Image 1: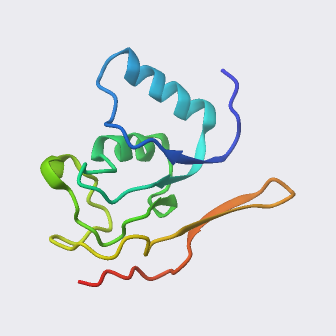
Image 2: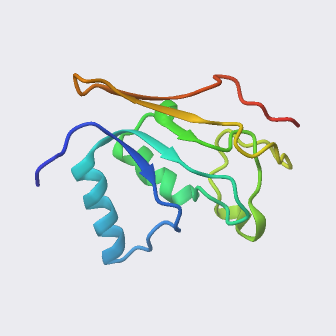
Length: 125
């Protein structure tokens, strides 16, 4: 398998694939891309990002500090609460939408980074 090199993945919002061929495809994709950063566009009543999805990236070796989410502080897990990845969420908190902007920078040299526009979460809670 050819590895694409370190990259930034903007993670899909769907549920983590079940333990089937789909899960194997997901794992092969992660291995091929070999992400250094993962960005979860999150914050909805659907419980995203899912814990199982986040765990797959962590197991692959993505550093916890390099896994960013657009809903720091929020606990907007709706009916799927137990499935949501709780890292950086505050129980019962629902802060403003659009307050956790992630900035992705790709340099002409090919180096890249992903950081929060505001390093401190604006939880409003």
